Image (cartoon, rainbow, N blue to C red):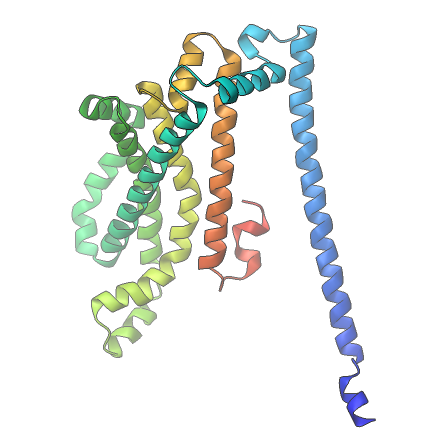
Length: 292
């Protein structure tokens, strides 16, 4: 009888289980509602576009049509492009993007933390950082084309510049926002400057750094695409440039759709990385709660 009393769920346990099921149901209903709204937006936009092109309200030569974009994608994936298979062009763009993203992120984190930790260095470097950030990226793209030619190096360099400033300012600000009491306590316990930086400052600034990665990958992709539009032998930017030169609106939109798909895949992976690295953070503070 005593054992039965111990194992039998009480009213409090039942209320908690009911509340948990209700919360899961609300979250599921909310996700379904959001998904339904997103699907509705896509249907309205694409359906209206196709209807306008079919009825002659929109000039197909200028605006293309969803059916024409699908046909262009089928041609690229089945027959290839003038610069090789579509997969080769995707691989070239992604190689440039990922390299630029990784190099720019590492450089931005290292320099951001370094200048954030040492005010004297920040004061010396401040005018150079501001001047570099003020240079129009298109001008830099043209300079890199002259320096590195039409190969991938110039696109990687442009992606690095775009990513660097995005990550640097977040890492710098995150380092400045670290609680000084944590640093003082670590020093009192005998921690060296290296251990203070790696075990106190870096974890504390990690939220700022990881948050910048979402925008940083987009900047890396922009850098690679812009560099390819300015001059390249292959890549998605080159495909878009060729379509624009041939007044092929469907080709331009097809290239944009592929780029958007790659960006969404990268965003999904970065969000998973963020959830893994920042598992300690309350879920309501994460970007996943709002889908952004």
